[in-house]
Amino acid sequence: MKVNIHRVMKGIERLSEFNSTPEKGCTRYSYSKEDLLARKYLINQMKEAGFEVRVDNIGNIKGVLKGTEEKLPVVISGSHIDTVKHGGNYDGILGVVAAIEVGRVIKENNLKHRRGYQVVIFTEEEGSNFSVNLLGSKAIAGKIEFEDIKDLKDNMGISMVDMIEKLGVNSRRVSECRIPKEEIYSMIELHIEQGRVLDEENISVGIVKGINALNWYEVRIEGEANHAGATPMKYRKDALIEASKLISKIPTIVEKFGDESNVATVGVIECKPNLPNVIPKEVKFTIDLRGIEPDTNRRVLEEIKNELKKIENGGVKTSIKELTKAKETKSKEEILKIIEEKALKRKISYKFMYSGSNHDTSIISEICDVAMIFVPSVNGSSHCPEEYTKEIDIQNGCQLLLDTVEELIK
Image 1 (spheres, rainbow, N blue to C red):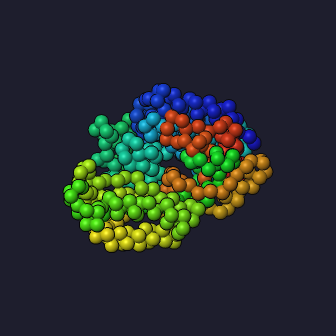
Image 2 (cartoon, helix red, strand yellow; image 1 turned 90 degrees about the vertical axis):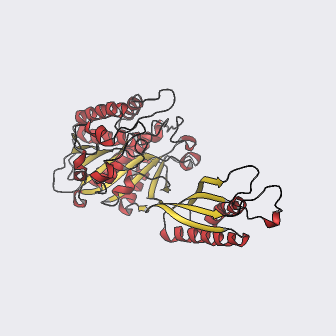
Image 3 (cartoon, helix red, strand yellow; image 1 turned 135 degrees about the vertical axis):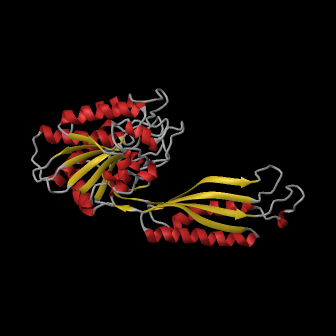
């Protein structure tokens, strides 16, 4: 069985038209006018392909092809169609269009399969509209109650509850979105890499071994404000100078104590009083630390803390606190082997890799086995108008998704 790449590309192009910022990238927030139009288009596409379609109480769209043994847990594929502001045309969208194409090919070939196949279009993955990401997958995993969403509003003050009800569903019963573990066999998601590894190495497909754990920390350094001209260097307790000592060492710490999956980013810096003629009294900055192995992540963090203690020798006070935490996701080894076998058979170039970005798959991993397939992002561009993936790589990714799903549902 082969995917029809022309249908896939047409689907991606069609979805790009549901956009509130033409000529400035793609902006399509969950539950917006553009989102509702995209939903209508996709539901029609799914019904035409032979899916039984329904929308759950948070707005996830689910399309089912029943298997010959309906009591068996199903195989899921899908992604999201919401975007960041001025985003691209491939993030999430590729995984949705590809998952529908897989079902379409299965129906066209009258494939007999024991397990059911389900496409899920997850709502509010990006969190652009209500600042809560991965909402649809969290609801399916049983992590969302009505209390969690009843007070959420967009930047215009419109409540999520009111927007959801435009879909004709009952958000007060959002807990009913949960799918029990025993009903899902596995999930496989096709996605753009959103990094530059595959493109730089001229590799068509990434087989994702896992999704990095995410930890955000806030570091605080307290010094002493004083006159910038009248205070000699040896008498200063400059919070910014001391902060810069740690910040500059973070890349070396990650390289020395981390593994290939570890990355760290200082993304926000606050300096007080933030005046040109006053020695900085206080600096706060964030560290985004990611990696797949808990022991390695701990080792990197401990070394950062050790360096932080050394800074206190400069006469400043320091502290570090955790802001947010998301555990790592490891893909199912058996599914990875299937993907690799299919890539070898199709003569598609591939490499094993980790995902530094979070995905709906990471949440769904709490209720079933998972895996992901990446395709290259040209120049590593994503969440921007320049986001682009070559047609040949899209075709290879879609074909591997089809081949893997076929193996899992048979």
